[in-house]
Image 1 (cartoon, rainbow, N blue to C red):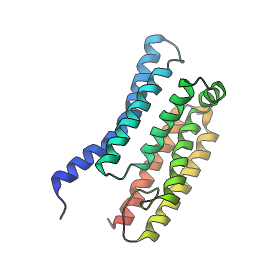
Image 2: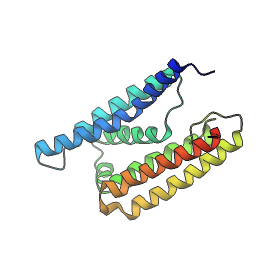
Image 3: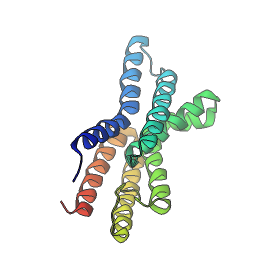
Length: 184
């Protein structure tokens, strides 16, 4: 029997994984409007990365399976803040030119690592049938590769088309694959 209190706490703690990217996007948008320029990204990346590291550590210490897609988003924030912190101009230029593909590439990196090196896989589910985990993780990895190619192809169409829409599609695919494993 599942303890409802623990389930609610776990749900709340897992929802924390959305905070870093949300704060980053809102803060960057506000800062862009206030400063009336498109170069107001440094502080939002620092804040997002700090939140990402803090909240991911909290979730890990709480013993939760980390949300793989949000882990990719958090990796994006940390890598970008690293580029800003150490003023790695070629990487910052690439990030500026390929925002969407860079974001999806970070999700792909997490997908590769978790698919082949963790028991819950990229799908992020514990099951007695490890074969289902591997199959679902490979399916989600295939979807992520397709999302990355989409993001590259539509890079010049804005962040919604090159990053947000493919990320939403990945979220939906992840939910469906998790439901299939859990038998719902």
